[in-house]
Length: 410
Image (cartoon, rainbow, N blue to C red):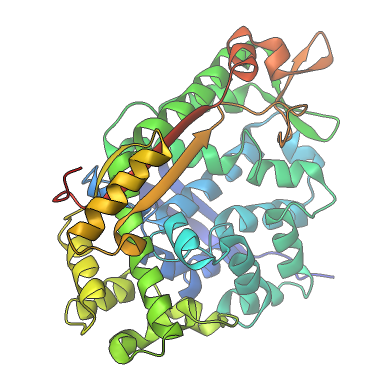
């Protein structure tokens, strides 16, 4: 059983440059927003090191999470048939899942996962289900509510409709981050007609599907995602920032393994570069403010490599990059680094990226597809759209680069 969800005395509204306003009607949502674990997201950039390229990309996981919640709320109110088939418990659990889906992100978002092997989805679940203010708020409405929300986020919930809204190829998460990231980077690539998509979504067989009249709006959304990945998310300068961050954590990990004293100045990094499980407390203590403070301390490190890498990161003296075409090219760069006194273990980073425009269900590793209702039959998008069909049949775009200091000439 669960306690009836209380309404706020009046609707709470927050200004938002993407959605106009964020509307909060349920007290549980307002309480979750004000919980310390959610407020921590203010101190984590949505786009990691992308602000090194697009200087206005200063928006946070906090604002994105509010945006995902708002789109989920609009979906419940707008999509024909959705509000009628969900009971209040499902609606509120869905709104909570939308709000809390990114709780487990560390500093610099996805970059942090790459350099520490921390899984943000696992820590999202731990924050929701273990000892936290978020967990206490949720349990005050029902012992099973944290697990229900966690199951929706992790795709374990038996009702596909709920998980689809949070995580699919046409979900509240992707729709918000495309519009928000486009706005804050100042590019137009991520723009699409959100209102049109919401108006052309309907419920069929307990899944969200697109009416035939909405195909072009969905095509624009998919193209927006593709363009944003290659023009913003995978920008080589952002990846250069990430490569230095990767080298810093690798160096700290190696120093701890060697039992060096040079890393003592950043003791709060130790749980993330040592063997053993990271506690929830240690994880929640590390945000970008503490991380950057740690890098400032590293500029006084006795270890010359850590000191140099920290200075490069803080002062934007990033590695240069070039397309990696052969192993011989890599060997030549390594030799040049060694001849100039640089350790290639920390000053040479290879990076490979690939991104699909859309994954059809029948493709290897394909996700659950987007379906279009045509003559009362469900047709998978790549069969209903010539544009999407062409991309599915083609090869995924790939980009292989190597990063190393600008002062090295090969």
